[in-house]
Structures are given as C-alpha cells and as structure tokens.
Length: 110
Length: 116
Image (cartoon, rainbow over the protein chains, first blue to last red):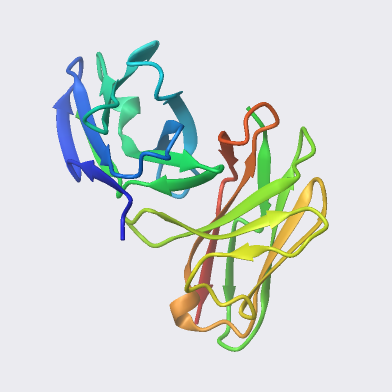
C-alpha cells in the first residue's frame, strides 16, 4: 500500500517551461517531505525538502508548495532544462523512515 | 550532504550463489543506514534499517535469512543476498541518515544485481 500518491506518472515539457508534480499523503505523522531526483542507473539525489510548518520553499529553479490541511505537496521546476530530464520521487518521513511516491518521469524537449 | 559509495556497481551471478554488496560512508560516521530495492521503472522499497552494532530491522515481507545485513562499523554496512535466484535481480541502493537530521537520507549510487 503506497502511503504517498504521486502524479502524473510522466510528463513532457518544452525547454523553458514549468514542470509540476503533485503528491498526496494520508498519514498525519509524516513530518518531513523531501523530493529526490534520479537519473537512470544512479541512486536518488536529494533535491529539496520541506517541513509541515512551512507552506513554500524555493531553491533556485525548484519550489515545493505544501498544503497541510489538504495533505498535499507539489514540486515546481521553473525554466525546465534538458538536463532536468530524470525521474522525480516525492517522499514523506516519520521516525526517519522514508515512504516514496511512485515517481514521475520528466522529459524536457529542447 | 554525505558521500556514500557502493561496491560493486553491478554484479552478475549464477543462481544459488551468494553476493555481498558494500555500502560505505566516506565523510562521516553513520549510526543508521538503510537498504532499498528498486525494480525497473518502479519506486524504492525499504528493505531494512541497519544500526551499527545491533541487528538490522527488516520490513514486513523481507526475508531476513535471505538478505543478511551487517553494520559492523560506523562507515560500513553490507547486504548479502544468499542463495540468489533470478527474482532477486534488482537495483539495490543503500542510504545513510544525516548527522544533522535523521530525516535526511543520502543515497549511494546503487548496485545492479543480475542473477542468471
């Protein structure tokens, strides 16, 4: 049973466009929400993370929006570049155990 | 973030043999490490939590006698797949808990296991 639901499964965006990935959770005990970027054949790399007392966090072109009441959070990738083409996983953590979403494959067309 | 290495990066073995995968923390002492399994185009599934000097805690459905985990030092955890079968073929990834916040996890590059 997936504790974190992620959508869409894949998306294609033009270079310079905005990629948006959404995640939802049920367990209110989750207290840390990271996003990971994974390239084929590599381990996931931490991209950005947020805690539930913050509604938005921005780091460069990556922004997390967090809606605690709706139990939803999303990743926005601004000015998408071909190098951003990868699989993105949202995750949620409690007691330092991560539960991952199913992943979103992002393809940025030049 | 922490630097994590895994060895080997890929391994091919015959059915029935055992394979050991090493996970090393290169720049700080990790009391807690995690082992994940990932099937092609799928998400990461936590297999077990490894604490230095104590027995690993396995997730439900993971056979502890098949996937032996040893966390002998603060910089090394090993996963041994015993009597491997083709269905054990997968991408195995370790991670370690951050020193500042245990919620942060830093992942290794993964090991591709293929069992013939």
